[in-house]
Amino acid sequence: MRTLVEYCRDGSCGLFGQGGLIMFDLSSANNTYCIADLFAVIVLGVVGGIFGSLYNYLLDKVLLTYRIVNERGPKFKIVLVIFVSILTSCCSYGLPWLGKCISCPPDLAKQCPTIGRSGNFKNFQCPPRHYNDLAFLFFNTNDNAIRNLFSSNTKNEFYLLSLSIFFVAIYILGIITYGIAIPAGLFIPVILAGATYGRFFGTLFGSVSHFDTGLFALLGAASFLGGTMRMTVSLCVILLELTEDHLMLPLVMLVLLISKTIADIFNKGLYDQILKMKGLPFMEAHAELYMKHLVARDVVSGPLVNFSGVEKVGNVIHALTITRHNGFPVIDEMPFSDAPELCGTVLRSHLLMLLNGKRFTVERIVTEEETLKTFGAFDFAKAGFGKGLKVEDLDISEVEMEMYLDLHPITNASPYTVVETMSLAKAAVLFWEIGLRHLCVIPQTRRPPVVGILTRHDFMPEHVLGL
Image (tube, rainbow, N blue to C red; front, top):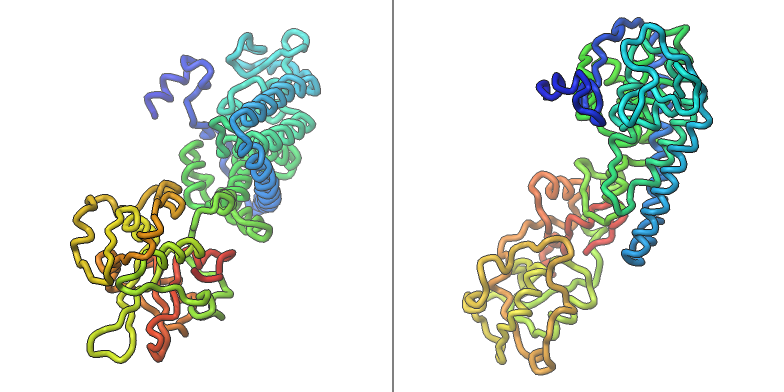
């Protein structure tokens, strides 16, 4: 990276930006600050938390709308991309007409205004030796725009109105662009929007704060990242690596913590919302507070769906069809016992693979390992999301429905078990720390031998209903 930075420092990288690929050098800025400056940091943190939570809320609504559009087919995806592209182009070219013309700095070593696609100062309908501050931002690559906002000792480069217009445009365009059928991320647009309002507040507080406007832009980017992503340590390290300004570590930590705390009052982080929207089962490191008042019995649905060690094919098909359970207890009559006992658990995916192999018997007999001889080593491996067998994929005849299937070879004979009165929060710890997928819930009296099965999916806040 250092080699690339030195190579790009003289402008050899063209549109990638002068001075480096992703690094924004703030080493020339004034790093001194006093206690009174912390007030400005707190304000930026609060503003970042509010803007970040609103950003997540609006993005969630937009993604839900895009899902409806994208599900209608490729043609609608293309139309949506064209619409957003045209809107982005109109904003990028139309909004700079609202900018003001500023005379080029007299002591500037660089060319002003620049000609062509590269360079910072853009003339855009201004007189000679003048530049348009909005075109300065819109007609640049994102990394150059961020570098311009982070630049130090450039207090009068942008008008407040121009910064406001650019922030609103980037804020809205970042929301409507994410989720369409193009590779578009969130990290750079969020940094760009945060740096814009950070620079805005830096201009406002310039008379009462020792901070340079470039440092305000950095803290604004940090506050917006904290308000949207809700990460702390990783964001702090990333920002310090980008700027090479380690003396700002305490202030970056403070603004991140404040913005995250404020934003958590309103909603969850951006990536948490996307995980929930996609339906991906994600279990938090700590159990929800209400789980302390629940026990394992409370989230086990009934009636219990279980199988015998050798079960009729029709019964297995019926159970897989009427339920969405991922695991089933196997209960069998044991020798020298006057009551059935829990033999173990079987997974839905393993049952489907066994049914698809059609290793059935006419009589109710135990086949032991002979059942598995026709399967390969990877047949029972976990399939990718949405790629496994489904009940609809099976082709079972009426005659085969009356035959029997030995479940012993695919039964987990030593499943983890918990008593029905165990706290749900403690059960969640087992799932998290041990990495379990299923827990058998057994009664205190052990008659019946099992009450039900808990899965990781049960511990998602919206699915405390038992499987």
